[in-house]
Length: 597
Image (cartoon, rainbow, N blue to C red; front, side, top):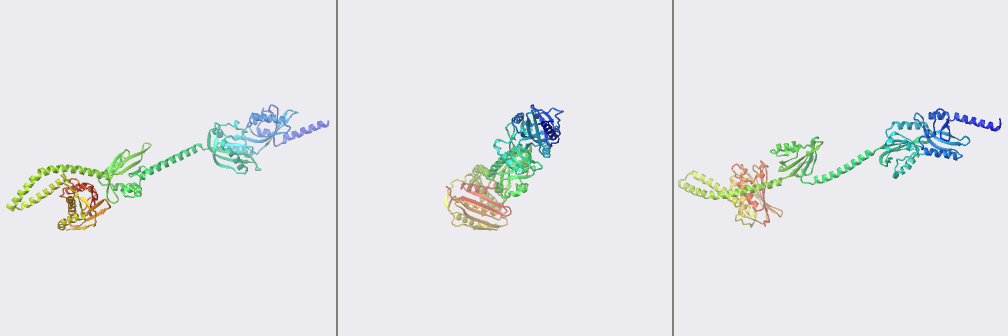
């Protein structure tokens, strides 16, 4: 045997030994890419024996595009050195193995020799298990940043198939966020991982989604990064829902601010009841302003409102709230904290949730002044009617009454009959009533306003009424404010008003008491006369009716005195105001304007 033959024999033995004992994957391939032979490691890793099954490089390098494999083969033919590439192969049972391949071309035998050095398999096994168990999109990159695997969730969410992605860079990062790739790489190289990074990702169709990204490096036993696992979670629905919620919350706050701006400043009381929770949801500040009661107490127990409603209106008010499923309106009286009576008008609107009553909104208006005007108009109408009646009575009754009185006087003088005095007393009372009727009929007839000192008129009236006050055990006192402004008035009429008020005050104290008459000036607008007694007082609900024709607080009263007084003061463009508390007394204030032009 020559030296050359011996050398070839030795080389073949070395190759055979390497083939059988190498821990790497070793195989040979023809020019068409068909694997001809594989060593035991190759057969073990791929699960295929090339001698028994036909397999090509295009089959077990499935993650690398066909064109790229052709380019690698061409480079191996043209180069005198081996070509190195990293590619993963998959066992028949689905197990993934990443290998670093060296491709060498043997022009003598026109064969390719491929040697694959396995990367760590334990880490990749973990990656494979993770891919199959998670429902979130997952991708695996090799140490060069190329995709080697994705799970079904990734394909479903982003639209790319595994074949399209194998060996490529991750295409899901939008162009405007391409800087994230470098940032992630730097974090991973430092041995850290990216956790729950909120960002935007791009799908195959170009649409964008909101996602949370977590990226973890996979290392071998030497601490070298051999793969990168990325998990993405599509949170588009949550983000859009959050944005919608934020927008709704913002709109709600804007509406709430507008609502508060209105409700906090309106004169009406705006209130919302929640019947399902049996509580007051909201009541506007005007509640305290109109009624004087605390809002906090109303919030704690809204049933307290029933105690404030006038007893004559309570039943109607309860029915108003009970019929809460329909729009309705009610007018009722309610007690202010200071004891005065207010007239309120409430309008109610049900707020339904899925056809079921949920809440009720009420708007309550203070109509006390409106009621006063209505009462005033009613009084004026009644006074007008009474005036016309009085004119007729005066015409028809006055002359016969005068004749009866004259004959009764003569009869009494001739017979000295004791009943004549009783008859004359009643006739004089009838004349007094007739005089009041005439005053109602033509209260302004021949009225001449002249400048007077009101204090002087008060003193004259007090002097006149002193005897009657003493007769009824009433101490008549005065509190005169000096240097009052002079005002224009009709002297007789104002005296008549004072007489009526003082008589009423004396009559209200059957057991005697103190009666105070005061004068004072209210700013530059009014001069006042106040008559204050310690009598039986007047019920709050009766005060608005004072001055009505034939309405009196006295058992034998006709109501004409107050009616005439109201008429006179109205003609003077003034006001009569009553304040009273039962069993404690009454204060009547007569306001006369300083300027009566």
